[in-house]
Every structure is written in C-alpha cells, then in structure tokens.
Image (cartoon, rainbow, N blue to C red; front, side, top):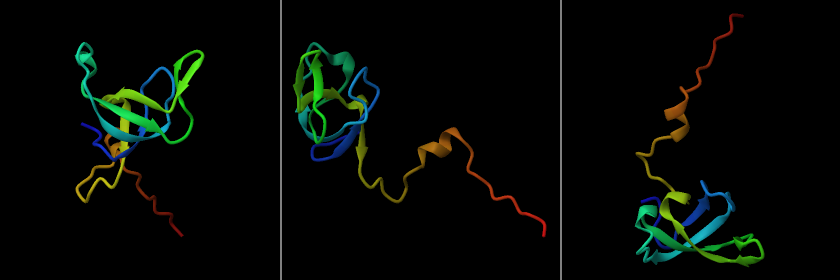
Amino acid sequence: MNCKPGDLAVTHGMPMDNGLIVEVLQSVDNRGWEYLGPCWMVRSLGSPFHMTPTTRSQNAALPDACLRSIRDPGGNAVDETLQRLPAPKREEVAA
C-alpha cells in the first residue's frame, strides 16, 4: 500500500483532481468496489474535490492506487526516475 493514516499524499491517476495535497484520515470499507483495492478517506488541504459538476467536498474516499505518499522513504529508497532513465553522467571537457 502507498499510504497509511496520518500521511500527507498527492492525488494522481484520476480523471479529475490530480495533484491535490491530501491528509489520509482512515481506511474505508470498499465492499462492492473491491476491484479498486484498498481505499482511504482523505481530506483535501487545498482545493475541494469535484464530486459532481455542481458539488464540491473537502473529503473523499480514494483508492490507495491514486495516492502518492509524501514522507521520508528511508535510507534504502530507490529514486524512481532512475528506474526509467539512466543516471546522468558528467562529461569531462578537455582543457
């Protein structure tokens, strides 16, 4: 899982409301929506979520897969950008 209660996270991979900073509040019972995987109740710390074209809310239930946690990953973390692209190399310039 990407998140745990108390984490700050960024929303991504959704049709709308990507890039919102949220606080993860608690896990949500997703019976009937199991294909989404684990879900969390979150509170937006900025712009509200677009629930319908005319309704906004600061709180929403989101799948864990749509949240990217913002926290210290620890000493053995791997930079994800280096998994897609090689590490940059310095070119030596002859004087």
